[in-house]
Length: 519
Image (cartoon, rainbow, N blue to C red; front, side, top):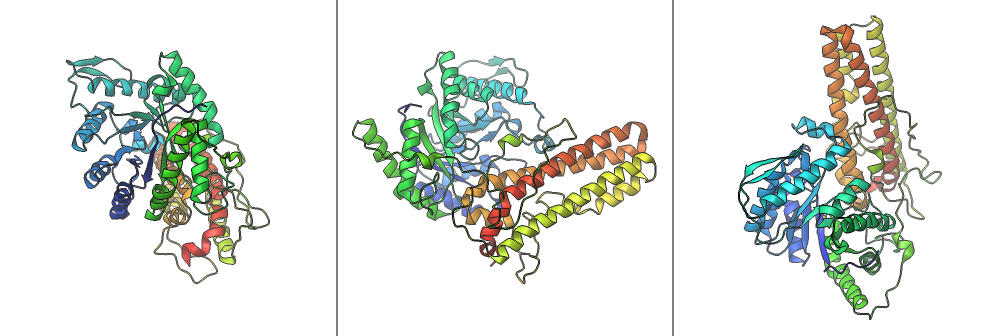
């Protein structure tokens, strides 16, 4: 796709960890001091380990002087658009015009519903976002009481204001065709993430946005293109954002000129990455793009660097630990998530080495998961015994409560993010959490780690449904059994799918990073 001609923006995506609040604020301040343009945070209100996005963004705005701040992206089902409009405008006023709005339809519906939010189908989600953008824009436009009638959001005479002090951008996180069309028709910006939309997919997605923009009487240039990215400054530069700053600069310049990307938002966990990004990558990209736009550039193409990195998966004989494949079979018609949207981690680098301790850690992950698979089979057997009348529902509920999967409640997972001891070694990891360690050692795993944690929360909700169905079965055996079977079928689908995904993404990193995690 062509260069849309927007000014270039560079920023960071900081993790909103409640346990490391001071460190999160320090990352934002370093980005400000280093001369970056943007600081963003993810918005998952249902995650008890995360700081509230709007409170954090307000704190960041107060502790910085130049960066623009925005949610990456706001969770619409838990952020009513009328209130969101007031919040963004207020922050823009208080920060002197430094607020933007990233917004999405939301996901992980069990977790959203647990917080009192609505459960929406994909079609309903797109329609709700369309209505929400209309509500937000109406409340930012001077005038009398505003009335909008919508299926999901309405205004019944609400008075506009307060008003932002600059033209706040509404940047939509979108990937599928309906959402991409909405982005072209209504949004000020497009905000995908590289693990979900790798570079080689951008052209086709941009084409959908451009066509929709033209169909709505807009110019494709009306939609700024931003890109959440993750990478490492180690490596040869032969893969996307895996190499020295010079390779990054060439690759990001290619995205700016060929795909129209004008905003690059780096997922970070440490100040060193911020410093290198700001001091070495940002000025080089700006210089290369400016030269090309002026007709002076002799940009070096790096096509091989723009290929997507496939999933880590099974590294075969090198690692010697094989993830359990997903059979693909499903018992329930209900889906808690779209498996096609799962981010994938980096593929093993050529010549990657795996220690004995790393192999043991990877094997332990599979072993614990196998234990959970066995417990799932035991659960299904107990349900059939209840159906046959050979096991009392109360006794079954008591037995289920003893299972590992139930005791862990899947808020932190059976193995990942848990405090455990590595079998066969003397290294205790009781005081450490696996996910933060993986994220710290390989930032490319951050989207996978976030996705796994969100799926853990979703599985917790399914376990609650199984328990509720067992309680209902006691009072109404005739009607309760179909509901119980339905809940257990859903648990089977989600748990087995999740375990395979987790192994496929983490077995290789565990084998590679194991000694550093717990050494």
